[in-house]
Image (cartoon, rainbow, N blue to C red; front, side):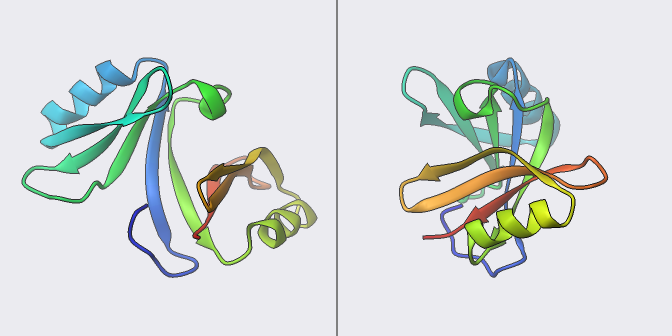
Length: 126
């Protein structure tokens, strides 16, 4: 999520799985992506980069740390202006915050479940 994106847009996509190396290799073969490691303090997650591209388009993450309780699924990150306000509105609308808020430097995010049961992340840029 290095590039600033507009509020309401999808700013990033992560896949959280128990064996990130195996799934990383799968998508490198299937989609033609290559990877760069992301140090997570004792293990690496991966930024996935298309063919000859220079910018990552997705992440493949181990189900560890803040991702330990997430199901194996692609997770979209929706950009919001005010994470705290969006979490409150989520709860008021019948959704729930199932993880977070978490910080990545000055950036913050949380994972929500909407009233239909779908899971997404909300992401506030620095």
